[in-house]
Image 1 (cartoon, rainbow, N blue to C red):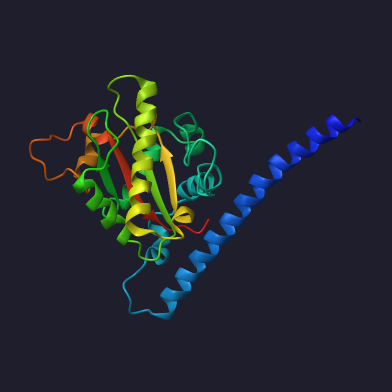
Image 2 (cartoon, helix red, strand yellow; image 1 turned 180 degrees about the vertical axis):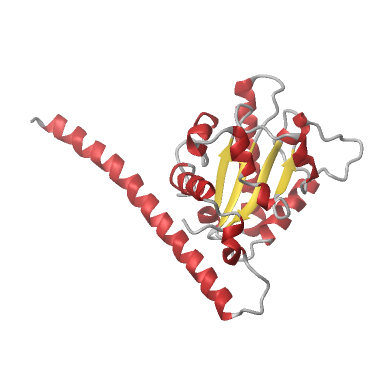
Length: 238
């Protein structure tokens, strides 16, 4: 075996081993944070219940599985080439569920999650959106994972809508970084952008906490609700 072949083999093995090591390290750290949250709650039983103590309410095996996959594949390990988060073409393989089943996973979080809405062909947070992001972030209650699941409506070009979806998720992350300057933020925020092709929301989600719920001149249609980013703290032992 010549030196070129040996070099390629070593490079390939390293390419597999390093991501596996990173995933293992992140999951270990996440599990440690989860146990610390539980221990803190047990030490102060009179405190307000935290998410970790109510895990059975929404931490289904399917949701845990998605959290685990997003943690390993979608940017919770730090900066990756091309940006953090799962590309739209990866979303369905990450979820391994139908669109309806994927959306149903988050129904138990209806009182805690928020939907950040955007103008057509726009990726900037307006003032109500910034306020809702900050409110959702403050509602941590001991949780370890802050999910941002962004979408686009079916208007216009599908490729362009993928770009809008990605930029909307990044806009939420950027605002959190600027506002809170949390050194652990990159270990806590997971981005999953879906574009227009997977898990479109129905108008039943218009009743959720939305950044534009008070605007009477902006009706909540399917297109309006899908120009959005779902945000919520999720605490699941994975």
